[in-house]
Structures are given as structure tokens and as C-alpha cells.
Image (tube, rainbow, N blue to C red):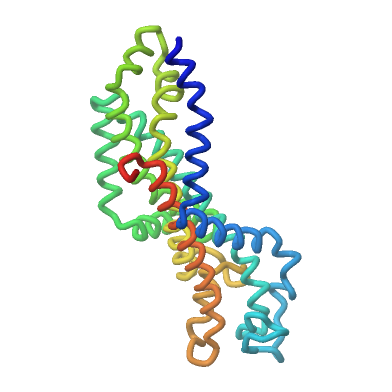
Length: 289
């Protein structure tokens, strides 16, 4: 009992220690600041946009960045700043939703494979290895070929492409955890498989999955933007950083700003999320302490 009480008393101190490490970790703090700025710009896009995103003005084509047009205009005379702030909504959402899909289904399959083993593990592992044989972008393109173009299909395609990584991570973590004494104790007192999986095993394997998901969001944003760049995601009139980047590639010599600013948005989003993931990895992974 005394040991349990001491452990409970130590929990607030451990939480304060983890929080202190977070706020003193350069990667985590700097990445969070950049990401928060991008999120706030996207959330408050209606207030920050200075022009309608789809209103063309033939007399204002290729206006360079300046006071009246912060990021200039494109070949249709549309305001790039207004399209930029709205485009962030879609690009960031694609990364988040895709990682939720990949983490949920990949972790579920990995937990089942690692816990039950036998032929279930063999079949799921074989499927994962087959999917891992395809580069992520090629796998996403294959899914898009089946589903067709569209933002929702991009989220699904990128999410499916990330399932194997989560499945392997979850499976390896479960294989280590299921042999621990407290799992045997849970079986002894009559816990069901569901209780053991989701009350005892899952909370103890979340750390690596969270770090993987955080790092994976940046890759998902890049893949989503790449699919939109190829014309498979956001359609031409929809503001999205990947499609904006694609639309401006023909004018790089004369109007660099059409592509550069959306590219900067993609770069900052990926940089910030990767820095947050690195910071979390340094703090949550005991091997790096």
C-alpha cells in the first residue's frame, strides 16, 4: 500500500517534469509556434482574406506582391493571399484526417496480430509486407485510381498508405508488452481479451504510436499536396496549396510568387510538424533521455 501511495504521489511530479521538458525543448516549442500560426491563419481565413478566392480580374493578372496584394495575383487575377489562407484549411485537414485513418486501422490490425499471433498474425503480417513493398506515393496513386479524384478520396488514399507503418509499430509493441507480468495478472483475475487489449496493452503502446502519427502528418500533407499537384485532389477552382503550386509552375520565370508562396506554406507545415514529432520523440522515448 505504501508503494502504491508513493507512486500516486509521484504522478503529479512526473507530469510536471514532462511538461517542463516540453516547454524547454526547442524543436517542440518552435514547431508548435509555427504550426499554431498556420492553424490560426486557416481558421480565421474569412477574416484575413482580402478578396474573394474565386473572383477573377483580367485587369489584375500577375500583379507582384505588394501592399495592396500581399502575395500578388495569379494568371486569372485572383488574390493569392486569400487563396493561401483558405488553402491551408484543406492541406492541414488532409494530413490530420489521413493520419487518423492510418493510425486507427493500422494500430487496430497491429494489436490484433500481435496479441493473438498464430495464423491471424501470419496473414496480417503478409498483407502488411505486400503493402510495404509499394512506395507510399505509388500506393496512394493506386487507391486514387480506384476511388477517383477528390479531396475526400485523397484523405482515404493517403490514410491507407500509412496503415502498414502503424500496423508494424503496434504489432512489435504488443509482442513485447503481452509477455509482461501485469498481463498475466490481468488474465488470472478474469479480464477478457477486450479488456486486456484496450485497458492494459493499448495505453502502454501509445507513446511510439503518437510520435509516429505526429511525424506522419507532415508526410501526409506532402502526399496530399502531391496528389493535388497531379490534379487528383483539389480541383482547379478550389484553393489548396498543392493545386496552387501546380497552377503556377508554368509561370515560374515571369511570376514566381504564384507557386512560391503555396510552396512555402507546405514547407512550413511539414517543418513544424516534424519538429514537434522530434521533440515528442526526445521526451517520450526513454532511450533518448
